[in-house]
Amino acid sequence: MQRFLLICFILMTATGNGWTQNRGIKKRNKECPSFIYRVTLRDKQNSPYSLNHPTRFLSRRSVERRKRQGLPLDSTDLPVTPKYVRQIETEKVNIVGTSRWNNTVLVQVKDTNEMARISKLPYVALCKKVWQAPDSIEPTAIKTKYEEHFHEWDSIGQTPFGRADLQIKSLQGHRLHSIDLKGEGMVIAVLDGGFKNVNQIPAFQKVNIKGTKDFIYPHSPSVYYELDHGTKVLSVMAIQEPHYYIGTAPEASYWLLRCEDPQSEQEVEEDYWAMAAEFADSAGCDIINSSLGYNDFDKGFGSHKLWQLDGHSTLISHSASMVAKKGMILVNSAGNTGMGPWKKLTFPADAEDCLTVGAVTDLLTNAPFSSVGPTQDGRVKPDVVAIGSPAAVVTGRGSIAQDMGTSFAAPVICGLVACLWQSMPEKTALEIMELIRQTSNNQEHPDNIYGYGLPNFWRAYMIGKMKETQGND
Image (cartoon, rainbow, N blue to C red; front, side):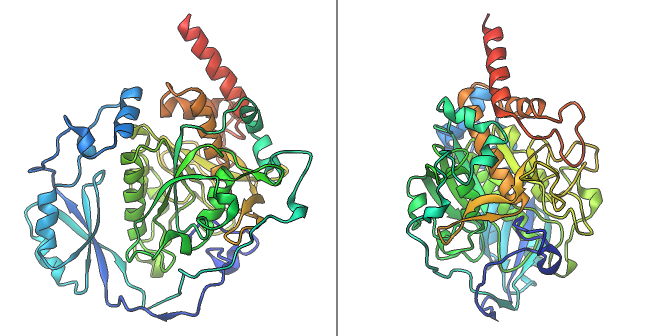
Protein backbone atom coordinates (compact mmCIF):
# COMPACT_ATOMS: atom_id res chain seq x y z
CA MET A 1 0.00 0.00 0.00
CA GLN A 2 1.51 3.28 -1.14
CA ARG A 3 0.41 5.78 1.47
CA PHE A 4 3.04 8.48 1.77
CA LEU A 5 6.06 8.82 -0.49
CA LEU A 6 8.10 8.76 2.69
CA ILE A 7 9.18 5.17 2.01
CA CYS A 8 12.69 4.26 3.01
CA PHE A 9 13.90 1.60 0.55
CA ILE A 10 15.48 -0.46 3.34
CA LEU A 11 12.09 -0.86 5.03
CA MET A 12 9.87 -0.66 1.98
CA THR A 13 9.25 -4.35 1.43
CA ALA A 14 8.52 -4.87 5.11
CA THR A 15 6.34 -1.89 5.90
CA GLY A 16 4.82 -0.86 2.59
CA ASN A 17 4.14 2.73 3.58
CA GLY A 18 7.45 3.30 5.30
CA TRP A 19 6.10 5.05 8.38
CA THR A 20 8.53 4.82 11.25
CA GLN A 21 6.49 6.98 13.57
CA ASN A 22 5.00 5.11 16.51
CA ARG A 23 1.44 6.03 17.15
CA GLY A 24 -1.04 4.43 19.52
CA ILE A 25 -2.74 1.07 19.79
CA LYS A 26 -5.70 0.70 17.47
CA LYS A 27 -9.10 1.45 18.88
CA ARG A 28 -12.64 1.00 17.64
CA ASN A 29 -13.69 3.62 15.11
CA LYS A 30 -16.76 5.51 16.33
CA GLU A 31 -17.49 6.60 12.74
CA CYS A 32 -18.57 3.08 11.74
CA PRO A 33 -20.69 2.56 9.79
CA SER A 34 -19.96 5.50 7.53
CA PHE A 35 -19.44 5.95 3.79
CA ILE A 36 -18.40 8.73 1.44
CA TYR A 37 -19.66 8.95 -2.13
CA ARG A 38 -18.39 11.08 -4.98
CA VAL A 39 -21.41 12.60 -6.70
CA THR A 40 -20.61 13.82 -10.20
CA LEU A 41 -22.94 16.54 -11.49
CA ARG A 42 -24.07 17.06 -15.08
CA ASP A 43 -23.74 20.83 -15.30
CA LYS A 44 -23.30 24.15 -13.51
CA GLN A 45 -26.60 25.71 -14.47
CA ASN A 46 -28.61 27.95 -12.15
CA SER A 47 -25.39 29.30 -10.66
CA PRO A 48 -25.18 32.76 -9.03
CA TYR A 49 -21.54 32.93 -10.11
CA SER A 50 -20.26 34.35 -13.38
CA LEU A 51 -16.92 34.36 -15.17
CA ASN A 52 -17.40 38.10 -15.52
CA HIS A 53 -16.98 38.52 -11.74
CA PRO A 54 -14.19 36.08 -10.80
CA THR A 55 -13.26 37.76 -7.52
CA ARG A 56 -16.48 36.38 -6.05
CA PHE A 57 -14.85 32.93 -6.01
CA LEU A 58 -11.13 33.55 -6.61
CA SER A 59 -8.73 35.82 -4.74
CA ARG A 60 -7.40 38.89 -6.55
CA ARG A 61 -3.97 37.30 -6.49
CA SER A 62 -5.33 34.25 -8.29
CA VAL A 63 -7.03 36.39 -10.92
CA GLU A 64 -3.90 38.49 -11.43
CA ARG A 65 -1.76 35.37 -11.81
CA ARG A 66 -3.97 34.20 -14.68
CA LYS A 67 -4.04 37.64 -16.35
CA ARG A 68 -0.26 37.86 -16.17
CA GLN A 69 0.04 34.53 -18.02
CA GLY A 70 -2.75 35.18 -20.50
CA LEU A 71 -4.90 32.34 -19.14
CA PRO A 72 -8.66 32.69 -19.64
CA LEU A 73 -11.14 31.58 -17.02
CA ASP A 74 -13.48 28.77 -18.03
CA SER A 75 -16.38 26.75 -16.64
CA THR A 76 -14.08 24.63 -14.46
CA ASP A 77 -13.31 27.76 -12.45
CA LEU A 78 -16.95 28.26 -11.47
CA PRO A 79 -17.95 26.79 -8.10
CA VAL A 80 -20.33 23.84 -7.99
CA THR A 81 -23.89 25.18 -8.26
CA PRO A 82 -24.93 26.03 -4.67
CA LYS A 83 -28.57 25.17 -5.40
CA TYR A 84 -27.58 21.61 -6.29
CA VAL A 85 -25.49 21.28 -3.13
CA ARG A 86 -28.35 22.54 -0.94
CA GLN A 87 -30.79 20.11 -2.54
CA ILE A 88 -28.42 17.18 -2.02
CA GLU A 89 -27.97 18.24 1.60
CA THR A 90 -31.74 17.98 2.20
CA GLU A 91 -31.45 14.24 1.50
CA LYS A 92 -30.10 13.72 5.05
CA VAL A 93 -26.46 13.52 4.05
CA ASN A 94 -23.38 15.41 5.22
CA ILE A 95 -21.54 17.48 2.61
CA VAL A 96 -17.81 16.80 3.02
CA GLY A 97 -16.64 19.07 0.23
CA THR A 98 -16.91 20.01 -3.44
CA SER A 99 -14.58 20.14 -6.42
CA ARG A 100 -15.24 22.84 -8.98
CA TRP A 101 -12.62 21.50 -11.40
CA ASN A 102 -14.36 18.11 -11.49
CA ASN A 103 -17.92 19.35 -10.75
CA THR A 104 -18.30 16.85 -7.92
CA VAL A 105 -19.72 16.78 -4.41
CA LEU A 106 -18.45 14.51 -1.62
CA VAL A 107 -21.26 13.27 0.60
CA GLN A 108 -21.03 11.23 3.79
CA VAL A 109 -23.82 8.85 4.75
CA LYS A 110 -24.48 6.30 7.46
CA ASP A 111 -26.76 4.21 5.27
CA THR A 112 -25.91 3.54 1.62
CA ASN A 113 -29.62 3.38 0.80
CA GLU A 114 -29.66 7.16 1.09
CA MET A 115 -27.70 7.35 -2.15
CA ALA A 116 -30.51 5.79 -4.19
CA ARG A 117 -32.55 9.01 -4.04
CA ILE A 118 -29.54 11.21 -4.78
CA SER A 119 -28.58 9.16 -7.84
CA LYS A 120 -32.05 9.86 -9.33
CA LEU A 121 -31.77 13.65 -9.09
CA PRO A 122 -31.91 15.11 -12.61
CA TYR A 123 -28.59 16.94 -12.35
CA VAL A 124 -26.65 13.93 -10.96
CA ALA A 125 -24.61 11.97 -13.51
CA LEU A 126 -22.88 9.40 -11.28
CA CYS A 127 -22.50 8.31 -7.66
CA LYS A 128 -19.40 6.35 -6.68
CA LYS A 129 -18.39 5.06 -3.26
CA VAL A 130 -14.86 6.26 -2.51
CA TRP A 131 -14.54 5.63 1.25
CA GLN A 132 -15.75 3.28 3.91
CA ALA A 133 -14.88 3.93 7.54
CA PRO A 134 -12.27 1.43 8.79
CA ASP A 135 -13.34 -0.73 11.72
CA SER A 136 -10.44 0.47 13.86
CA ILE A 137 -8.12 3.45 13.84
CA GLU A 138 -4.83 4.53 15.38
CA PRO A 139 -4.62 7.81 17.28
CA THR A 140 -2.62 10.28 15.21
CA ALA A 141 -3.33 13.62 16.88
CA ILE A 142 -0.82 12.98 19.64
CA LYS A 143 1.30 15.71 21.19
CA THR A 144 4.99 14.84 21.26
CA LYS A 145 7.99 16.54 22.80
CA TYR A 146 10.35 18.52 20.62
CA GLU A 147 13.83 19.92 21.01
CA GLU A 148 14.21 23.64 21.58
CA HIS A 149 17.56 23.83 19.76
CA PHE A 150 19.56 21.97 17.18
CA HIS A 151 22.52 19.94 18.45
CA GLU A 152 25.93 21.59 18.40
CA TRP A 153 27.31 18.75 16.29
CA ASP A 154 24.78 19.59 13.53
CA SER A 155 26.52 22.91 12.89
CA ILE A 156 28.84 23.09 9.87
CA GLY A 157 30.91 26.23 10.09
CA GLN A 158 32.26 26.06 6.53
CA THR A 159 28.85 26.52 4.88
CA PRO A 160 25.79 28.59 5.75
CA PHE A 161 23.55 25.81 4.41
CA GLY A 162 24.65 23.38 7.10
CA ARG A 163 23.25 19.87 6.70
CA ALA A 164 21.31 20.94 3.61
CA ASP A 165 24.48 21.99 1.77
CA LEU A 166 24.75 19.15 -0.73
CA GLN A 167 21.12 19.01 -1.76
CA ILE A 168 21.02 22.69 -2.75
CA LYS A 169 24.52 22.93 -4.22
CA SER A 170 24.00 19.86 -6.41
CA LEU A 171 21.41 21.93 -8.28
CA GLN A 172 23.42 25.19 -8.22
CA GLY A 173 20.68 26.66 -6.09
CA HIS A 174 23.14 28.29 -3.73
CA ARG A 175 24.09 30.66 -6.55
CA LEU A 176 20.52 31.92 -6.71
CA HIS A 177 20.64 32.54 -2.96
CA SER A 178 23.90 34.43 -3.42
CA ILE A 179 22.05 37.08 -5.48
CA ASP A 180 19.21 37.19 -2.94
CA LEU A 181 16.80 34.94 -4.80
CA LYS A 182 15.29 33.00 -1.90
CA GLY A 183 11.63 32.81 -2.86
CA GLU A 184 10.48 36.21 -1.60
CA GLY A 185 7.02 37.09 -2.89
CA MET A 186 6.24 33.51 -3.97
CA VAL A 187 3.48 31.48 -2.30
CA ILE A 188 3.82 27.70 -2.04
CA ALA A 189 1.07 25.29 -1.04
CA VAL A 190 2.30 22.14 0.70
CA LEU A 191 -0.13 19.23 0.29
CA ASP A 192 0.57 16.54 2.87
CA GLY A 193 -0.78 14.48 5.76
CA GLY A 194 0.38 16.39 8.82
CA PHE A 195 2.74 19.09 10.05
CA LYS A 196 3.54 17.96 13.56
CA ASN A 197 4.89 20.67 15.86
CA VAL A 198 5.55 23.20 13.09
CA ASN A 199 3.75 25.74 15.29
CA GLN A 200 6.04 24.93 18.23
CA ILE A 201 9.53 24.08 16.97
CA PRO A 202 11.66 27.26 17.22
CA ALA A 203 13.35 26.68 13.84
CA PHE A 204 9.97 27.04 12.10
CA GLN A 205 9.04 30.30 13.79
CA LYS A 206 10.77 32.34 11.08
CA VAL A 207 8.70 30.65 8.35
CA ASN A 208 5.98 32.80 6.81
CA ILE A 209 2.97 30.51 7.12
CA LYS A 210 -0.10 32.14 5.61
CA GLY A 211 -2.51 29.56 7.00
CA THR A 212 -3.58 25.95 7.27
CA LYS A 213 -6.59 23.93 6.12
CA ASP A 214 -7.73 20.35 6.70
CA PHE A 215 -9.67 18.58 3.93
CA ILE A 216 -9.89 15.15 5.63
CA TYR A 217 -13.13 13.73 7.00
CA PRO A 218 -13.31 13.83 9.95
CA HIS A 219 -11.06 16.84 10.57
CA SER A 220 -8.13 16.63 12.95
CA PRO A 221 -8.09 18.94 16.00
CA SER A 222 -5.04 20.52 14.36
CA VAL A 223 -2.79 19.83 11.38
CA TYR A 224 0.05 20.50 13.82
CA TYR A 225 -0.85 17.44 15.90
CA GLU A 226 -0.66 15.03 12.98
CA LEU A 227 2.18 13.07 11.40
CA ASP A 228 5.46 14.84 10.72
CA HIS A 229 5.86 13.89 7.06
CA GLY A 230 4.72 17.38 6.08
CA THR A 231 7.02 18.86 8.73
CA LYS A 232 9.99 17.25 7.01
CA VAL A 233 8.83 18.30 3.55
CA LEU A 234 8.31 21.91 4.67
CA SER A 235 11.70 22.01 6.35
CA VAL A 236 13.50 21.19 3.09
CA MET A 237 12.21 24.48 1.67
CA ALA A 238 11.54 26.81 4.56
CA ILE A 239 14.02 26.46 7.44
CA GLN A 240 16.58 29.26 7.81
CA GLU A 241 19.14 28.52 10.51
CA PRO A 242 22.60 29.42 9.16
CA HIS A 243 25.30 26.77 9.53
CA TYR A 244 22.68 24.27 10.72
CA TYR A 245 20.12 24.15 7.93
CA ILE A 246 18.90 26.48 5.18
CA GLY A 247 16.12 25.32 2.91
CA THR A 248 15.76 26.04 -0.77
CA ALA A 249 13.13 28.83 -0.43
CA PRO A 250 13.37 30.28 3.09
CA GLU A 251 11.75 33.60 2.16
CA ALA A 252 8.69 32.19 0.38
CA SER A 253 5.25 32.09 2.03
CA TYR A 254 3.46 28.81 2.70
CA TRP A 255 -0.03 27.34 2.96
CA LEU A 256 -0.11 24.02 4.84
CA LEU A 257 -2.91 21.86 3.44
CA ARG A 258 -3.74 18.45 4.91
CA CYS A 259 -5.26 16.06 2.37
CA GLU A 260 -3.70 12.64 3.13
CA ASP A 261 -5.68 10.40 5.52
CA PRO A 262 -3.34 8.27 7.68
CA GLN A 263 -6.15 5.97 8.83
CA SER A 264 -6.76 4.23 5.52
CA GLU A 265 -5.75 4.24 1.89
CA GLN A 266 -8.86 4.85 -0.19
CA GLU A 267 -9.87 6.66 -3.35
CA VAL A 268 -11.42 9.59 -1.47
CA GLU A 269 -7.91 10.90 -0.87
CA GLU A 270 -7.80 11.81 -4.55
CA ASP A 271 -10.85 14.01 -3.95
CA TYR A 272 -9.20 15.59 -0.92
CA TRP A 273 -6.10 16.27 -3.03
CA ALA A 274 -8.19 17.93 -5.75
CA MET A 275 -9.97 20.13 -3.21
CA ALA A 276 -6.62 21.16 -1.70
CA ALA A 277 -5.19 22.01 -5.13
CA GLU A 278 -8.28 24.10 -5.91
CA PHE A 279 -7.93 25.92 -2.61
CA ALA A 280 -4.29 26.66 -3.46
CA ASP A 281 -5.49 28.12 -6.75
CA SER A 282 -8.21 30.26 -5.20
CA ALA A 283 -5.87 31.49 -2.44
CA GLY A 284 -3.41 32.76 -5.04
CA CYS A 285 -0.60 30.24 -4.60
CA ASP A 286 2.09 30.09 -7.28
CA ILE A 287 3.45 26.59 -6.69
CA ILE A 288 2.15 23.36 -5.20
CA ASN A 289 4.45 20.81 -3.58
CA SER A 290 2.82 17.39 -3.40
CA SER A 291 4.84 14.57 -1.87
CA LEU A 292 1.91 12.19 -2.19
CA GLY A 293 1.05 9.38 -4.56
CA TYR A 294 -1.47 6.55 -4.92
CA ASN A 295 -1.92 3.33 -6.82
CA ASP A 296 -2.98 0.56 -4.43
CA PHE A 297 -5.98 0.97 -2.13
CA ASP A 298 -7.16 -0.96 0.93
CA LYS A 299 -8.39 -4.47 0.09
CA GLY A 300 -7.77 -3.70 -3.58
CA PHE A 301 -11.01 -1.72 -3.87
CA GLY A 302 -10.56 0.90 -6.59
CA SER A 303 -6.84 0.18 -7.03
CA HIS A 304 -5.43 1.63 -10.23
CA LYS A 305 -3.98 -0.11 -13.27
CA LEU A 306 -0.88 0.68 -15.28
CA TRP A 307 -2.92 1.63 -18.35
CA GLN A 308 -4.35 4.53 -16.36
CA LEU A 309 -0.97 6.31 -16.20
CA ASP A 310 -1.97 8.74 -18.94
CA GLY A 311 -2.48 11.91 -16.90
CA HIS A 312 -6.27 11.86 -17.13
CA SER A 313 -7.80 8.46 -16.32
CA THR A 314 -7.78 9.00 -12.55
CA LEU A 315 -9.44 11.91 -10.79
CA ILE A 316 -6.24 12.97 -9.05
CA SER A 317 -4.14 13.01 -12.22
CA HIS A 318 -6.89 14.71 -14.21
CA SER A 319 -6.96 17.41 -11.53
CA ALA A 320 -3.16 17.65 -11.44
CA SER A 321 -3.08 18.10 -15.22
CA MET A 322 -5.19 21.23 -14.78
CA VAL A 323 -2.81 22.99 -12.38
CA ALA A 324 -0.66 24.64 -15.06
CA LYS A 325 -3.81 25.78 -16.88
CA LYS A 326 -4.56 27.84 -13.77
CA GLY A 327 -1.10 29.40 -13.88
CA MET A 328 0.51 27.37 -11.09
CA ILE A 329 3.40 24.91 -11.12
CA LEU A 330 2.86 21.49 -9.58
CA VAL A 331 5.98 19.77 -8.24
CA ASN A 332 5.09 16.15 -7.44
CA SER A 333 7.11 13.22 -6.14
CA ALA A 334 7.53 10.36 -8.62
CA GLY A 335 6.87 7.69 -6.00
CA ASN A 336 8.92 5.04 -4.21
CA THR A 337 7.75 1.88 -5.95
CA GLY A 338 10.89 1.25 -8.02
CA MET A 339 11.86 -1.85 -6.03
CA GLY A 340 8.35 -3.27 -5.77
CA PRO A 341 6.03 -5.06 -8.21
CA TRP A 342 4.42 -1.80 -9.43
CA LYS A 343 7.72 -0.02 -10.23
CA LYS A 344 6.08 2.78 -12.20
CA LEU A 345 5.01 6.29 -11.21
CA THR A 346 2.27 6.69 -8.65
CA PHE A 347 -0.70 8.96 -9.35
CA PRO A 348 -0.66 11.98 -9.90
CA ALA A 349 3.01 11.86 -10.98
CA ASP A 350 1.75 10.97 -14.46
CA ALA A 351 0.03 14.36 -14.82
CA GLU A 352 0.62 16.55 -17.84
CA ASP A 353 2.43 19.86 -17.50
CA CYS A 354 3.93 19.29 -14.07
CA LEU A 355 7.41 18.68 -12.68
CA THR A 356 7.60 15.06 -11.55
CA VAL A 357 10.66 14.54 -9.35
CA GLY A 358 12.63 11.33 -8.94
CA ALA A 359 15.35 10.70 -6.35
CA VAL A 360 19.10 10.20 -6.62
CA THR A 361 21.68 9.33 -4.00
CA ASP A 362 24.16 11.73 -2.44
CA LEU A 363 26.60 10.44 -5.08
CA LEU A 364 24.06 11.59 -7.72
CA THR A 365 23.39 8.04 -8.88
CA ASN A 366 19.99 6.45 -9.23
CA ALA A 367 18.09 5.71 -6.02
CA PRO A 368 16.69 2.23 -6.71
CA PHE A 369 13.38 2.88 -4.92
CA SER A 370 12.55 5.87 -7.13
CA SER A 371 9.57 5.15 -9.40
CA VAL A 372 10.19 5.09 -13.11
CA GLY A 373 8.39 6.27 -16.24
CA PRO A 374 7.44 6.80 -18.91
CA THR A 375 3.70 7.47 -18.84
CA GLN A 376 1.43 5.10 -20.75
CA ASP A 377 1.06 7.68 -23.50
CA GLY A 378 4.83 7.91 -23.88
CA ARG A 379 5.75 11.14 -22.07
CA VAL A 380 9.13 11.37 -20.34
CA LYS A 381 8.81 10.91 -16.59
CA PRO A 382 10.22 11.75 -14.14
CA ASP A 383 10.93 15.24 -15.45
CA VAL A 384 13.92 15.85 -13.19
CA VAL A 385 15.72 14.38 -10.18
CA ALA A 386 17.19 15.65 -6.92
CA ILE A 387 18.89 14.18 -3.86
CA GLY A 388 16.50 12.02 -1.85
CA SER A 389 18.64 9.09 -0.74
CA PRO A 390 19.23 10.37 1.83
CA ALA A 391 18.00 13.94 2.21
CA ALA A 392 18.55 16.14 5.25
CA VAL A 393 15.27 17.12 6.95
CA VAL A 394 14.01 18.60 10.19
CA THR A 395 11.67 16.20 11.97
CA GLY A 396 8.57 16.78 14.07
CA ARG A 397 10.80 16.40 17.13
CA GLY A 398 12.84 19.41 16.07
CA SER A 399 16.01 17.54 15.18
CA ILE A 400 17.99 17.38 11.95
CA ALA A 401 17.93 13.89 10.50
CA GLN A 402 18.32 12.02 7.24
CA ASP A 403 15.38 10.44 5.48
CA MET A 404 14.83 8.72 2.17
CA GLY A 405 12.21 9.10 -0.51
CA THR A 406 11.13 11.08 -3.51
CA SER A 407 9.02 12.92 -0.93
CA PHE A 408 12.09 14.91 0.02
CA ALA A 409 13.60 15.26 -3.44
CA ALA A 410 10.46 17.12 -4.58
CA PRO A 411 10.66 20.06 -2.12
CA VAL A 412 14.36 20.55 -2.93
CA ILE A 413 13.22 21.23 -6.50
CA CYS A 414 10.07 23.09 -5.47
CA GLY A 415 11.89 25.68 -3.39
CA LEU A 416 14.33 26.45 -6.18
CA VAL A 417 11.48 26.73 -8.67
CA ALA A 418 10.18 29.52 -6.42
CA CYS A 419 13.59 31.24 -6.42
CA LEU A 420 13.89 31.01 -10.20
CA TRP A 421 10.35 32.22 -10.85
CA GLN A 422 10.90 35.09 -8.41
CA SER A 423 13.57 36.38 -10.81
CA MET A 424 11.31 36.08 -13.87
CA PRO A 425 7.76 36.79 -12.72
CA GLU A 426 6.58 37.58 -16.25
CA LYS A 427 7.20 33.99 -17.41
CA THR A 428 4.36 31.49 -17.46
CA ALA A 429 4.25 28.28 -15.46
CA LEU A 430 4.85 26.30 -18.65
CA GLU A 431 7.83 28.45 -19.61
CA ILE A 432 9.50 28.07 -16.20
CA MET A 433 9.06 24.29 -16.25
CA GLU A 434 10.44 23.99 -19.77
CA LEU A 435 13.41 26.20 -18.89
CA ILE A 436 14.23 23.88 -15.98
CA ARG A 437 13.99 20.75 -18.14
CA GLN A 438 16.13 22.18 -20.91
CA THR A 439 18.93 23.24 -18.55
CA SER A 440 19.16 19.89 -16.78
CA ASN A 441 22.15 17.62 -17.30
CA ASN A 442 20.35 14.85 -19.20
CA GLN A 443 18.27 17.06 -21.47
CA GLU A 444 19.84 15.70 -24.67
CA HIS A 445 18.83 12.13 -23.89
CA PRO A 446 15.97 12.12 -21.36
CA ASP A 447 15.06 8.67 -20.07
CA ASN A 448 12.60 6.92 -17.74
CA ILE A 449 14.91 6.92 -14.69
CA TYR A 450 16.55 10.36 -14.58
CA GLY A 451 14.17 12.17 -16.92
CA TYR A 452 15.92 15.34 -18.05
CA GLY A 453 18.35 14.88 -15.15
CA LEU A 454 19.64 17.14 -12.41
CA PRO A 455 18.53 20.74 -12.98
CA ASN A 456 21.08 23.50 -13.04
CA PHE A 457 19.12 26.40 -11.64
CA TRP A 458 21.92 28.90 -12.16
CA ARG A 459 22.09 27.99 -15.84
CA ALA A 460 18.31 28.25 -16.06
CA TYR A 461 18.53 31.72 -14.53
CA MET A 462 21.28 32.88 -16.87
CA ILE A 463 19.61 31.57 -20.02
CA GLY A 464 16.22 32.89 -18.94
CA LYS A 465 17.65 36.34 -18.30
CA MET A 466 19.56 36.29 -21.57
CA LYS A 467 16.37 35.53 -23.48
CA GLU A 468 14.66 38.35 -21.59
CA THR A 469 17.35 40.78 -22.73
CA GLN A 470 17.16 39.58 -26.32
CA GLY A 471 13.40 39.91 -26.26
CA ASN A 472 13.68 43.53 -25.11
CA ASP A 473 16.15 44.51 -27.82
